[in-house]
Structure formats: structure tokens, C-alpha cells
Length: 455
Figure (cartoon, rainbow, N blue to C red):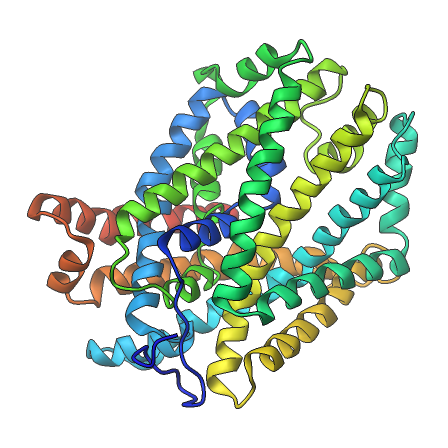
């Protein structure tokens, strides 16, 4: 790394940069492509008007997701530090209160809390790779598939093993640094994920139900579009891009000035959406060909699909491919969630990169134990009427993420110098007027709508 790179708060550390735009795009896309893209988005499309929902979702991405993504990258690149220091110092430079640092605090806290229970789900994916490889799915019926999943949830020892394995994998990657860990992993896993998806879509074309899947996902049915459908599209456009959790601010802090933020954001949004739709084209032909329920929600992955894999020719290979795909999607998101916490520790303490990663990893792993116990030994322990897992999910998704995202977009639109923002984005006067309207009014209103509706 060049000695001219911006220095972090602790002078012993030199701030890293991505080695290439392609590496950054793959890492950012990997962060955006998570477990929700594999099952939630296709399911939302099918149940919310098919192609009509896709069009609404794309409009919401353009009006809310993309502007906030660009804003988080811009803030991160300008600060060249962890999200908390970045918000504090940029606010001071703009003549604003350093209390804007609370936006960074909220984002880093959200990333830490989300990873604690996300790692538990990542452990489920790892466990199912093992089950697929050992032939556990062979001949499964509905009762046995349900018992397999509930049995795993009811076994704290098994959950702890897989949670630990997933967290150790995440820590090992992040400890290797921005280029050696995050970027290298993205360059390996994202093309592999795309190849697995392509192979699964190819299999879906042979099932005889591929056209039914196309119809389910893309036929516009405006009669299904309600106010709640618009809210769902707004919410998913916000959450799918890893917004509001300091991830994109941290990733932006490693960006050079030569990267065009708007065109790069468009690329990431397109890749994220294509992968989510491709997942639907991989999953639903199998579901329809086997007469299964496409509206099974989370159970679609861990209960419904194993039944299909256990009853079709080549099901073992397909199951291994699918749950590897799910694991890769979980890993690329998990390493991005750990990064803001590690960046903060590395810059605000004397800890080395490796020590900061291990420290953050252990803390996250420990909180994850409380989350996994909520399915078994601590199932009766309720806080505000919720178990630990649900409490962490609710606190982050309904409060921290929308509030952090709102803070970043308002700061970018109202606090940063307008001329410098226009120059950085390379916009014409007309283009910047549109940007100004979107970031000052449309996107914030959209986030507030999501926030209020989620309550």
C-alpha cells in the first residue's frame, strides 16, 4: 500500500485501498447478495404481483436504494476512516455538530448485532451442506424434513458447532485484510456463486416447470398490488444493498478517487437484482415440478427444498450445489458485516488487524450464542415479548438500519458542500438538480415511510 494513503486515528495503521474497481464491485455485490436474495426476494416477487412488483422494486431502488448507496460510499471515501470518525470529522469540516458521529455509531452497532444472529443462520447453511453430502435428504417426506430442521434448532450443541465454524471462517477471511481477505474472497466466491446459480437455472430448464416459474416471477398482476406491496418493495430496496449498517461506508473508505460512484452503484444494483431473480429461476422450477408450496417462506430453503432434492435424480449433487450457493452468499455478507467493527478497533485501539478481527469475532460469536439458545434452552427467556434472536432482528431491521440510512442521506444532502458533491459525481446542472431532489426529499421520505410502516 502506498505511503501517501490517508492515515487512520491510530498512526500505526495505514488505511488500505481496494486494488481494483472490479474487486470493489464484486465485494460490494457480495455484501448485497445475502441469504435474503436467495429465498426472500423471489418469494416476494411471486406473492406481490410478479413483474408488477419487479417494476415497483426497481423504481424504489432508483429513488431510495441507489442514492443512499452512493451517499454511504461518498461519505466513506471522503473520510477515509472508520464510520464513526468519518461522520465526526466530516461534520466538523462542514461546520456542523460532531453529534453526527452517532450515525456512524448506529451503523457499526447494527453491523455487530446483525452478524451475531446472521452467523447462526450461516451455520444452518453449513450444516445442510454436510447433510446434503452425506445423503440425509434421500427419501425425505414432509414430516421427516420438518423434523430434521426442528431437530437441528433444538440441539444447542449442533447449533454452537456450526455457528462457531461459520464465525471462524468469517474471522479468518477478514483477518487477511482488505485486498488479501475481502477482495480476494469476493473475486473467488462471487464468480463461483454465479456459476452455481447458472447450473441450477440450467437444471430448472429441464424440469418441465421452467415456464411456470417464469410466469410466477415475471407476469405482471396489478390486481395483487396494494399499499403493502409498495411498502415491501421500498423496504427490500433499502435492505438488500446492505444500507444503514456502516458496511458501505467502511467499503467506501477504501475507495480511490478514480472510481465513479454513480456508474459503480448502478453496476452493483443490477448485479444484485439479476442474482436475486436468477435464484428464483433456480428454485421455483424445482418447487413446481415437485408439487411443493412456493409460499413456504424461510421453510422453503430448509424444509421444502430438501424434500425435492431427496426425490429427484441427481438430487444429492443439486443439494450440495444449492447449499454451497447459500453458504457463499452468507459468507460474502458476513465478512462485510464484520469489517466496520474491525476497522473501528484497528483505528481506535493499538490492536493489529488480526487482533482486532479476532476480538470483534469473539464478541460477535458470544452474542450469537445467546441468539442460538433462544431456539432451545432459552426459548422461554423473553425480552419485550421476544426471544433474543427476534429481539436482535427487530432492533436492527426496524430501528437501527432505517435511522442510520436516513442520517447518512440527510447528512450528504444538507451538510456537504453542494458544489463539491456535484463535481465528485460528475453531474450536469440538470442531473444535479435531480440528485438534489431525490436525496433531499424523495429518499428521506421513502425511508421514513419504511420506518413508520415497520412499527
